[in-house]
Image (cartoon, rainbow, N blue to C red; front, side, top):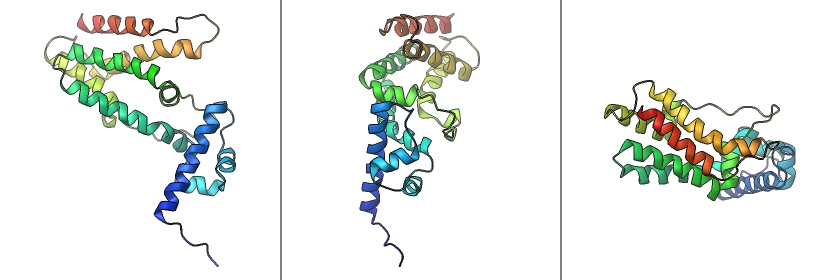
Length: 201
């Protein structure tokens, strides 16, 4: 006799339990002990149930960070909509990115410092033009170029460079433990000054 289908409420509860189990395993051990079997055992479900709710283990892990990152993006869109000066808007975006890395450190590490183990399948890629977060940087640079405040050139290349520079200043002390690097926000803030100065020249 086939098992009865779960109600929508039961499906939501199962999905919630799977995400909670994955989040607990990640917070305790990082990625090294995360597997579909480990999450299934912790959630009290089968491995097949995990894949019926999440297409892959990578999708499950990304789902842990999707909501807070979406919240960050919505806040940035609302805040920067009122900033007409593109330089000020770009500086605000980058400064708030630094603030997010401090205020929601575990989410930042998962969403932005996530290093996918080779055993985990890669998530599907999103085209740059379809990513709202990246688009905030690109649009500020395009507006700066339109107004003659930023140098001419490929706005996509510049947006990636600016984001990468500040991100790298935040990531290096986290990922490179051998050196006693400055772990404060100061290097990232100085990187903002350097990059915006470069864009203006």
